[in-house]
Structures are given as C-alpha cells and as structure tokens.
Amino acid sequence: MALLAPVFFLTLLLASSSYGQRQRRPPAPEGPIETVKIQENFNLHQLAGKWFLVGVASKCDYLREFNHQLEATSIVAAIPDGKTLAISTFRRLDGICWNIKQQYNPTKTTGRFLLKGRGYGGNVDVVVGETDYNSYAILYYQKRRKISIKLYGRDIRVSDAVISKFEQHVTDMNMNEDLTYYFPTYGFCDSADEFHILDETKN
Image (tube, rainbow, N blue to C red; front, side):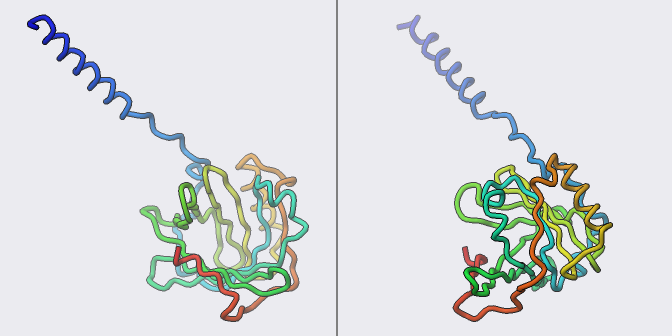
C-alpha cells in the first residue's frame, strides 16, 4: 500500500494537469468584421431617419438563387434611449406591406452594434463602415463569421461616386459584382397595418 499511494497521487496530479490543459482552448479566430474600419467620429443621432436599401453584397446562397425576387425596401432608424438603434424595415411579401422591427444594441465600441437572434449563433454583429449621414451609409453584418455589406441611401438612388465607394468595400471583403445585388427603386411601403408587424425585439 505504501507504494500504491504515491502512484495514486501522481495519477491524480496528471489528470488534473491534463484537464487544465483541455480547459485552456485557443481563442476562436477573428471574424472578418474585426478587420472593418468603423466610421471615424461616428455620430449615432445623425444616422436616425429614413433610409432606402440600395444594394447588398453577400455570399448568401438564398440571395444568389432568388435575387430576382428582391423587393423595394426602406428602413426608419430611431434612437429611443440615446444609444440603441430601433430599426423598422418596410417591405412587401406576397404583395402585402410588412413592418419588421429590430433592435441594434450598443456595444463597448462606438459604431458597432449587436442584433440578438434566436438560438446558438443567431446573433448578428453590425458595424457602420462609412457614412456621410446625408446621402449614404455602408453597414456590415456578420452572422456565424459570414459577412454581408449593405448600402443605404437617403434617396432611392445614390451617386456613381457612392456606388464606387460601396464596390470598394465589397472588394476589400473579397467579394465581387457577381455577389452584389441592387434593389428595385419602385414599389416601396411607407407603413403596415397592425396585422403585418413582425416584432423581433421580443425574441
């Protein structure tokens, strides 16, 4: 028994050591959104108001297959508490106008938000990459390390110079024109009745 005791404690020590090593997992690799440069001197309040969705760049398979079904889309951004973006998205589905409500929660980084989703991996990181507040805004969305870039305009059309800026952001994320889709400039919804409101803030 005298010989067994040291062996027993050595086994416990090795087991404890290996357990600790298993606990110290390497950090998860950074997502592509971590490389995005956030709009300098970002002013949240100037982002409020109505915007039209002009274009989106994404590797999403659904978009690639059904981009011919894109509907004119607009959003209204409000700031109810001085730090959170309350977004109402208006678009048609089967000819009926819907209002989809979402909440972009602030993070420790100015110009970066978190859109909470359902289940594991449902959250979306949002970054304001570039905006002049008066005519355009380029936002990045990352879900499960997959990124999309959206171009919004204060008007249904933006200048060629703004399109060039957007396309440069797309190129910087290793995407191209084959993965860029532009939205219709007609058929917008301004409102939705009470039976066609999808409130995702209650998830």
